[in-house]
Length: 394
Image (cartoon, rainbow, N blue to C red; front, side, top):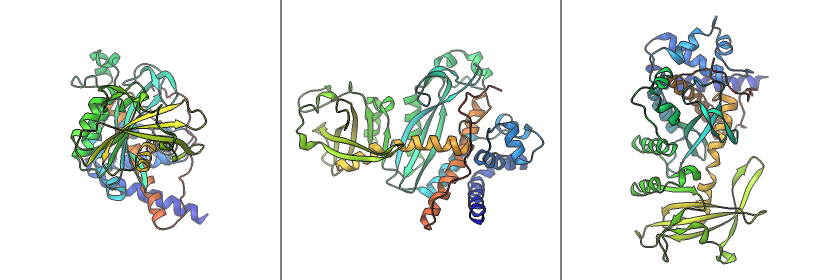
């Protein structure tokens, strides 16, 4: 029993430390205290995490303080996020880190929550009534956590300014593609001096030649998934389809490698790479990677890489495989930190909730890293049985 008590103290202490990084962003005592109580509630083993249950966990007489924190009190969620990123860099910062872009869906009922519509949700694997958030993850050998977030607004919202105003979306907020949001997040990380070496993303983002070119001009190394229809410059042609680079490749060019652990164990594939863009600066290389299923050789995925000339195939495979770290972040942040447990409709409220949930996730990640540093067995916070059902617009 003593070990459990000690673990709870560790998690509580780390929540207080991350809270101390941004407490100055609140002008009054009530929102300062409520922000910490909110994070404590998000990591507590509550069956559902809403205004009433979080208020009860905090010892409040009702949900008013929680609702004021998310909807009415004046505080800058982006400034708080800056402080959370600083905390992450202080404790997990690594010049070899990987920045990973991805989006996730949040199932909703009704039509009034900002950004909600029937759209594809990668979480559900189908089109659902949902909100979609674009996120940036920071992955190092010591841990991985989320460091940026933005709610995606479909044109059904941005072309209806009255609807936007009702959802707390300012007239200056226009439509942006998910890729445009991702580009802005990575550019912000660069401007803020976040230490990292690589950027990676799935094909929904990596297919953008414009973004890849932008990263290359900034000399940012990347391994971006793309589609079989993408094209590259080779010795033989401009706009050479990536899918045509590998069928005639000698068998010895394919290497069977694991790209990390997945939900069902080691993720083992056959990998090969072909150099492209041959007339470039001598200290950099461009590669197309192919990842072929061992059991179903007809299933091949492709990646475009820009990297130092001495980068090995194994290093590129590691970066490509690190993209799964963001899925782990989504899973643990939803299960342990209430990322998808919120009852806010307005645009600012969504970002405020996400910021505090991400702060709680960062604290747990840092606590686990510290335990591993001291040789203590990794422990988990109390498991919360959050519902997978759609959130109401209440």
